[in-house]
Image 1 (cartoon, helix red, strand yellow):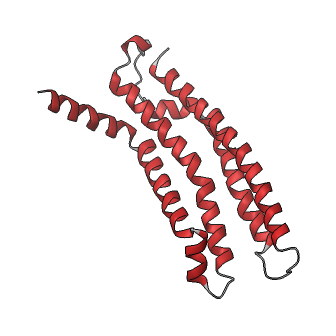
Image 2 (tube, rainbow, N blue to C red):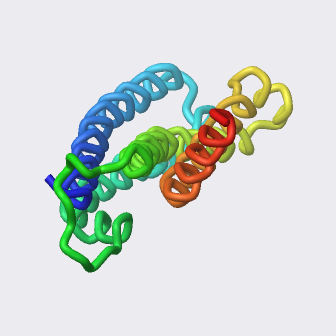
Image 3 (cartoon, rainbow, N blue to C red):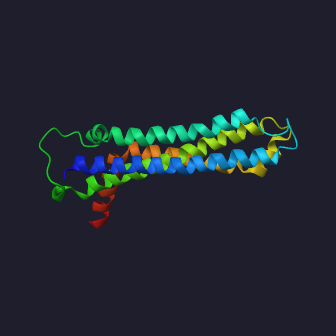
Length: 182
């Protein structure tokens, strides 16, 4: 296998992971909508807006499905971006540890992005629901919106950094290892 083939395989596996997470997201979405509906069934008008709840729950599902299918379909093109060499590629036996780390950082970045999308959409939904209540600050602390938003933003930022900066990060890592070994 060549570097591009390994990268393409890793991207396809990330796409499959996104599709698996989307199934879990669908289950969570259905559970959340039904439990909120049951909780506010006796108090019409006091609960969250169900249309907003449904839309906010469907967005992460659709993003994960899109990401999964996109990674599977575009894995060849994306792997060419990771390894843009035009020369005949060597077999995997010549794959350096820096190249393997580049692929690994990219895959971990994609996995973090896959996990960040549902969390970010959930936070947006929680904030929009919390805006309907008068005691907004108490609701934020009680529901953990602040903690959830910090986790989602950190996962998103770290995922983007690992995916987009995988080559530079791998080079920096190896440079530090060479300096440390001297």
